[in-house]
Length: 418
Image (cartoon, rainbow, N blue to C red; front, side):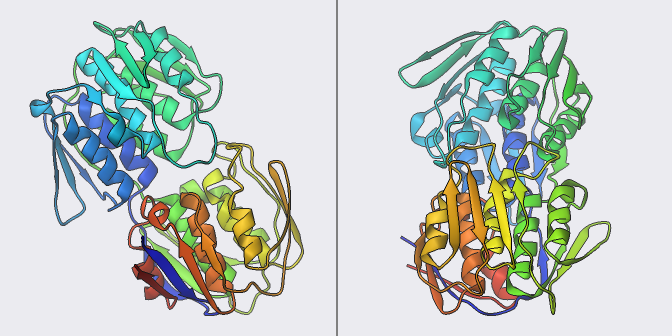
């Protein structure tokens, strides 16, 4: 099993080119199921999750081709099954995104209940109840969701909870439904909007993009398109955090500036100097004091849960006390124990962590428990004295493209070893 060995105490300095967004490309790949002609998706990050969903599509007979330019082409003409089996779906919860498109396009779907990071329950009932509202017959039996519908019907769907994948699944189902579908309390994340823009490029009729109410007028068919995925805002925030925690400077290129407002505000509160352009963000922490900040995660446009762990690492070496409240996932504090192994002073009370900044952290063997926890531990290792070994880095490979090369490019001492 691979791991990272990181020698800390080095201030990073340089430029990082941001990859396409993991959380945008996955639903867009699933949207390829809806197309009656081939489509090409560009700016696709080379990630384990992308490979997993590509394998799910290929397992149903869909032709999936990847080239050296980070493009993926999808052709449904070869589809021979509407079943997404357990062996593939179990490793990634986002695999459930094939459910809505399969029912909408082919009238049936059989999708294994998903797996993925152990950061808390992410129930599929919102997906199921939404499809049932559109007239699908849905059963859950022997670990599989089975859905059937001759043609879905437009419906009013009020999401009980804000769910990104739930919104995306029902949005993809609604674009081919007969009549108008309104999704209330819809997720507003930029990745949801990116999916909607892709669907419009395929011929869908959608209004309310970026708001909590999406209105979809169903069409008879969608065509393939040529679409480029938006930049990954969480990857951007992670590399900016690398500059903040090491007292260095990082300029992120090809970045999505608009989707990071809440995160950039917290960087400013932490004492960082920020500069932005049309598609770049620079954070300069040289000669400045890192200050602890209070964080509360909530659905977009509030502070994202996917940046909570990175700011926890920053707070661990900041001046003052920061309170971090996690409201999205009940198990997303598992990195706390690993940070404490490195000398962090953290008191955990349920979904709240009180972090008292320490002068320094110390290298230690640690274990990543999920994707963003792995980023947290890498950041802590960059700032720590001595060598840190981060185990279970397969979590990192799910969401960060070439992370060791990008960090090495800005001066970090990090190597991947077996």
